[in-house]
Length: 413
Image (cartoon, rainbow, N blue to C red; front, side, top):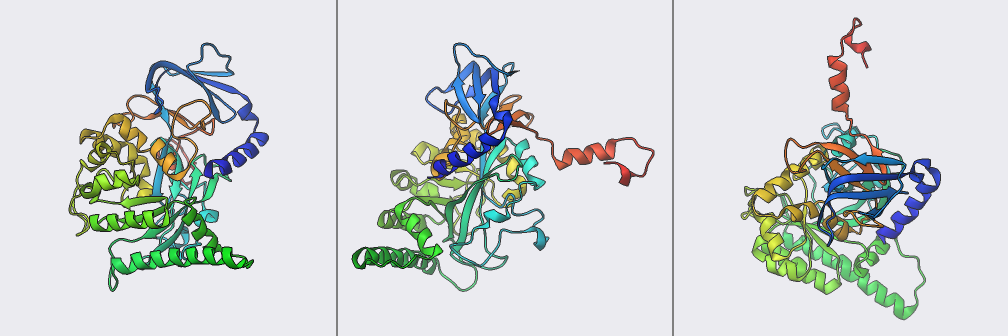
């Protein structure tokens, strides 16, 4: 469904942008396709109209040729589970649009700011798309956060590609009065009630228009809308697997610091897991098995692993490739770590992109060397087939304060 929506949007963009008419060839690159083709040396990738049109063609005609000279080409990385574009300064409430009490139907995508100073900084880390999520107001707890949405990081207006990418629920530890059991029961009750309504309407031919919440729950029950459930205790992950089987959920688990204890069950149930690869200390009684080797352990068990940034992911999502390098140093495969930031995310959320293959969305990154090395930088980056800059506010400030001027500093821009 998401890919269909994206195709419509992409078509609209194509009709209004002359830049898509040109053919770009990236030649002599080490290409990590993240497909069955594996890694290709001295390879050529063609881009036209926002799509990858060929990988290693026998011949080609291009308007623009970029000689990669052996540099590394990967799909663009995809961030998840942060408030990128919804938060500028966390401590300044008027610059925050991620929090609300609305519940299931809260859709923060209309507040997405593509000109946030954090977005060019994320591009410096090789990110081309991101799943932003809502949360509850500071200090409050609840089950239903609202809807996550996907946006590309081009910085252009209209860059939200899907406003309903996942329903976000928090089923983890509860602060103050409350129980994990009550949270799980509240979620199951919502699903049961909607399931009952659908059955009732089918029998009685009730033509009353469903509410926005009912429409979303129906999508959840059909498996069209993924559910991201935050939880870490192993016993609770098993309860979530039961819920998936009971209601046919398209379930993704976030946090999951004790997932290694039930890795075989998660793999068998085909439940993707979103984790931080640098979580190496228990942050609570639900996370006693936090370890640097968890990403590799889950990968070996056959779990679809997605890497993200724990804590302030909005400001630090550019660090994701470094965290992936730590995962590789502790047992994850190099290709598995790349997939955990690209194709695994795309597959779990129905996002177009995440691999380099004919017909795929042309979100690609040319790195100076191995993207997991600290000294490597982004050489060039393309989003939806268009080359974009990685210049950030930090670069502008550096330029401003290192530029000689006879005028007071306030006049230097």
